[in-house]
Length: 243
View 1 (cartoon, helix red, strand yellow):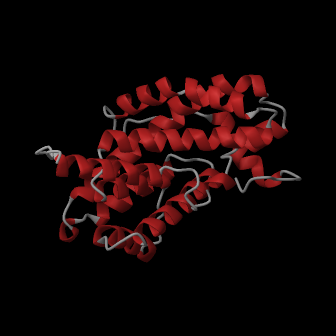
View 2 (cartoon, helix red, strand yellow):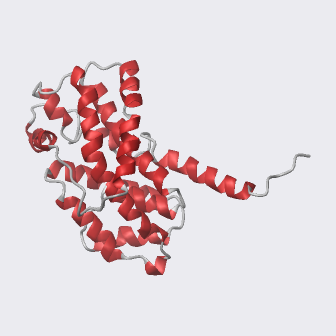
View 3 (tube, helix red, strand yellow):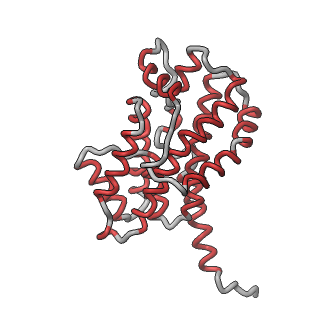
């Protein structure tokens, strides 16, 4: 009989947390992520963005929008480590309200909130998690938005996931979602989409690392063209995406 390593229980717990993280960051998670382009559809419709532009555009997207969302995800993480009785509803809503203020386009703000609400609701259904229920109920009570990045950070901490891996997983699924939107809007095949996402991984890693040195008070996101695209999206004559 093979001997069991002394730290096998710790390894199994870490592996289980990793599998759960992969599940939560999967694009197939039914929270509606595939229904949003966050303004990209408008830019393609206006012929401002072409298929050849996407690698550089997505690089900037990761560095700008990715930084803001990574910081929000990271700031929400400590709230999930606290015992349920010590959960700070005030800080939870403060983070979400601050992130709302940093999203000038109503359409993108609403899309982020829809994904965050659906994500947190899905996580609450996975087990008995008092902190998640408290966060959801407090936001509902005070009509505060729940953003996807803050919800992802909170849930990751409650489920005992590694913070750094959680940030990377969030950024990867966020980027993969926009690459998927590009495939439906532009003549980009599966092989090219795979290559684009593969080449963006160093930028994702760099953004996740840099986010550790910021708070929502110091993080910045400057994507005026994409914000304009989001604001103009409701006026499109035909739309494939909600945002």
